[in-house]
Length: 209
Image 1 (cartoon, rainbow, N blue to C red):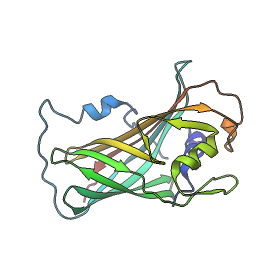
Image 2: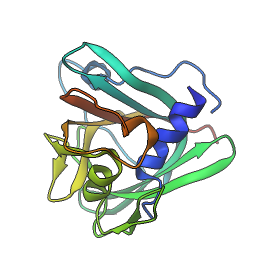
Image 3: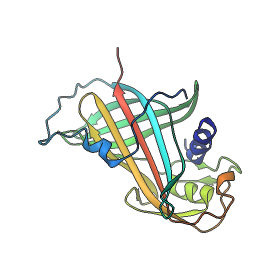
């Protein structure tokens, strides 16, 4: 799993694990954060810090099985900018090594509903041949060899949605892919009968002071 997490991080690693028992990457994980009636949350003006996990899963839809899945450590901060606008900055690690630091452009409703957008343009490089792209979707398609589409993709970037209840923050994105050619990552240098579902999530809890 350590190797597979390293390969998965490399898929977006060019955009500028010690494991416990992380939550699964499912839509139910978002629903568990919501009460029958949405509650207003009172957020302080200062930056909120988190710790938790970066989760991923690649799922072979036709075969009903995971091609790859796992989790790595993550830290994050949530900073209020103005109105309902925030920056969710997430750091993803392999052991003590920082692999990626991403400032997601974030909006949040008074009840804690979140939408987090991977910033574009960004300098995203293929981890194997260093080809440069200006958005994560083009880089992912090149690296994997898959044509990507679905609710987690819009205008060349990734859209995460989820919930913050004042203590726990969970955001999730998913999209489908069909193989068009071999990718640069070794696992994608074989015929993979699609479609393949890509799932990414952050499962975070407010850090103790």
